[in-house]
Each structure stands twice: as structure tokens, then as C-alpha cells.
Image (cartoon, rainbow, N blue to C red; front, side, top):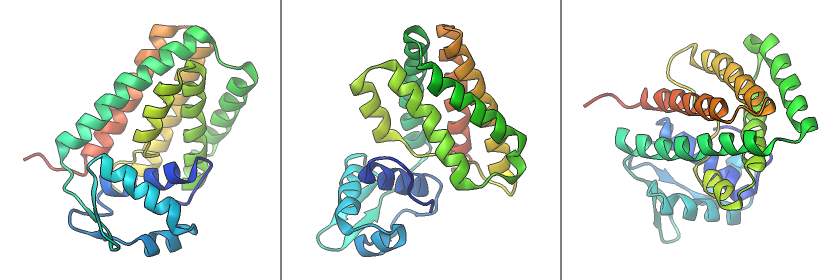
Length: 217
């Protein structure tokens, strides 16, 4: 699993576990131990328990009394349903961010970091990419200026949606960085519909990456 970054602890843990379930790192029927997850992530059992409750509410796991949780079955429809909601909400967040405008210092800092990242994309590590990926999306949510919209998106956050295959991570990092630059440039230029469409394409591609883990039936 990934390491913890900057987000409320229960949200960070839920995001890490959510991605691990989506990508098949944890499979249907696997048991998740509060103690083991807490030790692996270097946190106490309390935020792990809170994260488990979040994931149970989403239907990803079933809690067991004093025994952690069991991973539920996740299929292509489940993944599509989640990402279709992200598409609706994040595309709208990007549109609103462009209409409202984003703090200039934040925007230019993100663009600068993205260009630097793109210049050494072949050598980027998971933690570096994940941190910048999260910063871009959270900046868009903040600029959209709707607390409930941000809250819903936090509940669905799963970090970078890397597909399958040996070169999947590098391929995703490269494409995603270019997409992030386009989204932020449209927001900077106040092109609301273009920002919306760019975010829609970005999340659609992430969805296809996750669906690669689930064969057609």
C-alpha cells in the first residue's frame, strides 16, 4: 500500500484501503485486521476503525465484531458507479473553479511543480506523484467553493488510479500530469467549459485504468 500523506487521517487511510480494494491488492473475502493495518501505516487503531466504518458505508467491506473486516465483492459496475459520480462532481468542481478563479499563487505554484515533474517523469516516485496529484485536485475543490461538494469528493478519493502492466505507472503519471496542466491552465484562463471537459476526460481515463483490473464477463 501507499504511505500516508497530508489529509485527515481517517480519510487518508480510507483512500489507501479503497485503492487497494479497487486494484485487487485486497480481494473479495480477504480479512482486514485493525491491528495489522494500523501497524503497517504507523497509526493508532482509532483512525483505522473510523476508516473501516467509512468503507463499510460504501459497501466495500463488512465489519466483524472485534475481528476487523472482510472485503466484499467489487465488480465492474461498482467501479463504474463510483467513477461516474466522480466525473459528475469533479467536472462540475473544475467548471466552478474556472468561474470563481483560483488563488494565483497556488495555481502558479502547482503549474510550476507539474512542469518540473513532467521533466523528470521517468524518475518520479509514487509518493512524489501522489502528493502533487492530491494537491491539484484539492486546489480545484477549494476553488469550487462548495463545502458539501468537497466532502463528497473526499469520501470517494482513492489517489492515483494506475492501470495494470509493467509500464502502467509511468504511463499514467505522464498522461495525468499533462491533463492536470491543461485543467489548471483552463481554470487560470477562466475557460469554464473547457476545464469541465478536461476534468471529465481525466477521470474517465482513471476509470478505465481501474476497470482494467476487472475482466469483461
